Length: 221
Image (spheres, rainbow, N blue to C red):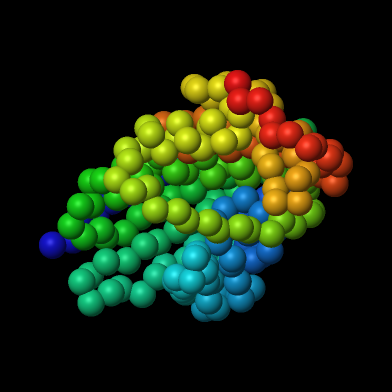
């Protein structure tokens, strides 16, 4: 049995409508703040596709109005499920813009948990979009998708392991410094915690200047 849902989010962004449009309607720039690797055919009736960890999902573009509106819809599955996204952009004084995102569709069994996860995810993604447009406008990032089994550990236990590995305090405090260690024995000392939510955390690094050699691991805080 399917269940309808709708999630609406709105955010003010420090960018012109043209800059926001580029960030939400071109594959490499979507990669820079959203999920997976994205491909977009820039036309109404084109295909917008996302690949996340080898899982590819495609949608048809049913609205393509540069600087104003970008909307997609996935095909209806055999079980009746589908997802639709609508992005509306409005310019504001001072070179800023308001972006309104509406995600809707039909979900299957367990729809309440899935809807809750989607609702929790959007503030995180829109925060990342704001960071991207503020600090890296016009640039593109490379998405990295990594998954590890939880071995039966709870969300809280997994989060504790992650924050400890990055030398972050728990709970994560905005502005806290994160430290990561690579196999080449270089330690990144430039990440700063920029978001902390019930299920997600995010950090931002300064471009190009973030690595210093280290022969010992950082001391966890």
